[in-house]
Length: 366
Image 1 (cartoon, rainbow, N blue to C red):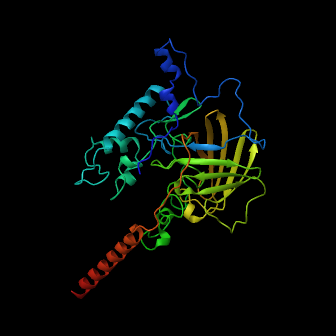
Image 2 (tube, one colour; image 1 turned 180 degrees about the vertical axis):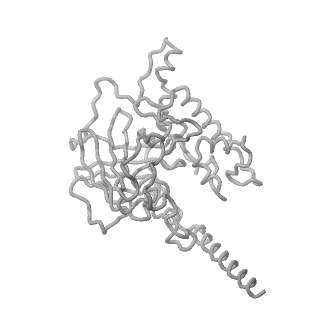
Image 3 (cartoon, rainbow, N blue to C red; image 1 turned 90 degrees about the vertical axis):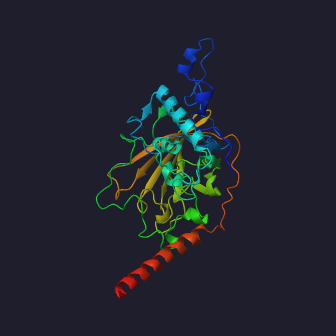
């Protein structure tokens, strides 16, 4: 089902106007920037006296997790440059919506001037799904059409590291990707999303990141004892306990073990006890993710995350973005558990192994 466009991060900048836009039309009073708190505004409190971050939110954005060095080497992008990138992104999405060339296949990037190629230049991560056999073309996705705006600044990456990339890994650290020796060996080595156990990407498991495709919506609920985060993707639900400490290290639930507390207007969440299947860039056993949720304006919740693993990186690092309001509610994600993809993938791998073994036998006999 094609998703209905939603209010994405920074969308109000394009519709309501920014200070620069107001200069071109002095007859109109400049509209307020929704990512900057208005004078005298105070964060609301709920019935329990907690800072209120509840509601329906979205983190869909065209800003990627990692900075694209081909576009810029700066974290903050000038408004004019941001609008140019947004237009290029929007144009590439619209062009890529054209009927798929059946000879090339979905997402094929054979012509450097093709719509797909231009889109991949802006968002290299689109090549992974769009380039695979049977991958979605852009008709089916809702990646957001605006760059991330935090405190009035257009951001080129979610990561706030100096170069917008993860830091260097320690010698001997587990590889960032490819945890399993052979992903075609068993269903246990396949992604959990293929069996509708967990969503793909990093929507639900800390750090919570936009997956770049669709289902980037959340419903946050608060009680005196916990904060509950329901994620649209496979309706995963994470419970952040506000009382007590972490469970024993030997117990490792899906999405890790999250405990939280309030520091002023900020909900601080610490998550440990990750499963290997929930690894972040290869880190899981000693991974600790600290998240900070802060209502910074009437329509924005700032989200910051910090990654720590003494076995993998020398020091903590992380990123930041804003949640924006979702126009609507989060509906059921009806994941189809009866598809044939997984058995077909494994059967294909067994067939290849059989053919390879037969070929070797014939060669040896000759």
